[in-house]
Amino acid sequence: MIEAVIVVNNHGLPRLLRFYEDYTTAEQQKVMGRVYEILTKRKDTSCNFLSGDVGLKNPNTRVIFRHYATLYFAFVIDESESPLAIMDLIHIYVEALDLAFQSVCELDLIFNADKANFILDEVLCGGLEAETDIKQVTSVYEAMNLHEKGKG
Figure 1 (cartoon, rainbow, N blue to C red):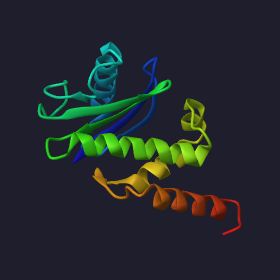
Figure 2 (spheres, rainbow, N blue to C red):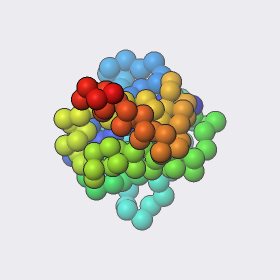
Figure 3 (cartoon, rainbow, N blue to C red):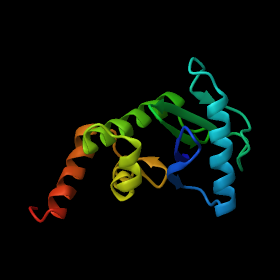
């Protein structure tokens, strides 16, 4: 199961946080800070999988991440998830954001957090993969946009 989705910029500022496990606010901040600390210390040529105790509740959790421009997209997962599938899921989410915002940037996540969360809800449901077809994810988002504009 996916325990958390963390999108943080190069300076450690969270741009999107979603926890699917029961963490207090203090624990969420600790997790986000620890994940950011680990990610920024890694070289760009290092592996994108972090295993073992990374300071989270469950010592068997893993952090799978990808670095796109100024943002780190990190998924905290338990041992039942496939790291390669999560890498693909991160890419699907970023690609959906890119299609929705016509070349997504950090400001899109700041000023359109509701839409970024809507797209994440299409990809994940309760910490489990819901949709991996990029066309399906973007079609739902486009339908929502038409409805918002009063054309749907």
